[in-house]
Length: 610
Image (cartoon, rainbow, N blue to C red; front, side):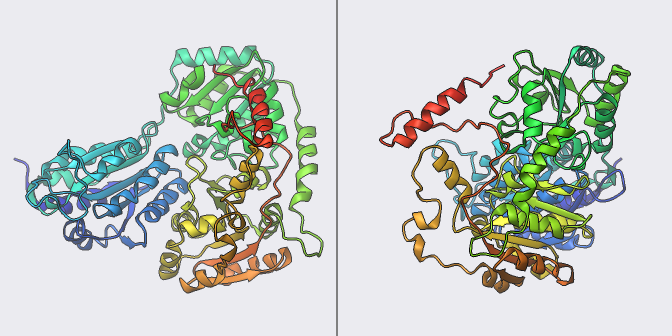
């Protein structure tokens, strides 16, 4: 007869979570971020306290950004480990929905445990309960359903016996990987049950490497053997699979050039002969020119997002074929692609064996040399003068200050596009961009998560003033915990990126830059003082020279270090890029909008549905 142990449901969850291990013997869940409220403090809070040595609990300042830190932690560790985040019911829970969407889009594991309403419904409606007048089973946590890879509502203690293994199966499965939400009814958290002791035995979750189907492998190899101008598009799956060395060997063996998505950037060093650099809307001319002429596009671990494909207008060769090597069947069959469902590393290894000595003609050295001759001057320090520095010049200053341990990270605004084009990644893992959800507010919390994942790394976060204002609270958490990273705040007084998009679509400058918003000219935010008030070391610099001097001091500073610099909101890197499908109004009183719509219709003709 199985021995049992009597525990509350919350205690059982915490003990089970702490017992789940990686292949290396580390706890898969490295810790729990928590903000306690009436919906989780008595149950989950008590359980976390009792297990605080086995499962550390971190106290943040916002549920969304706590989850962002957890997600960045996992992304940087290539999904090998994850974190748990718990909140109370109501706004604490809904704050995490944005983070769940971010994790879902990027295929990243995080265990979200929001408190929920009473399962017994005795005190209904409880504080913060949203009542659905036609459905008594609904709570705000149902908002997590479309942005969770696995969702469950724990309404009885024994339901954990099936829910928790399903949760970990999802988070450790390379194809289904993503956020798990266990909405935990607050009365059930405190209820006891006689759980089997065997349920809490240590369990190792091994990383599954899916081998390709032989039929798919044969058909893909056959297509490659008949191609004349193939190109490979490296996505985030290359990093998650630990396939960067395999990718380099494959590209070199078969002389197939590689373009990098935002998630795939740094898969190859920037100066590798086979690396064409960035692709798509924020891409460079080498990758985009080759992709436009390619008769076969081999995507490896990419979702083929619209920024990668130029809204499916980039791959313009009428004879082109798309092959998608992806661990997820959903991604492998997108847009009529020929699927090769496999782990990126194993898939490339077996594909190179199937191709034998196949080696394609072509040399992209001249394309790369021409590209760098155009964009390198943009990152040079400006001559002395009164002009505001550009974002490109800020990137150049940070690049010159970077070392082999530097991780450049960002998520939204102007910098993702400029970094994709201009940042020179020296080795895998030196570039961390959240551009699947492009979530403003990820940056500061994400930088903290990266530093927690790899404390020895030199983490430099790029953020604009608009993003800083959206979510800066974890700056105080990092200061409290003594977590060191650098934040470069480029203050262009508003949403410069969207302002340029607005102008590009023929619109008048309106409600993006503060000067074009009601009362915006009255705004006078001192970001350096604000960061200092939260415990960071901070400085406002007046030039690129001063920025480089400030960055040179970062290694000596404990805790978050914030460097603020005013920048020009208008310039961007004109070279490279492709069309992006953003609907322009068919009818407008503005001649500029009508002209932009005419151009939109022309560009729309290049878009392919197949």
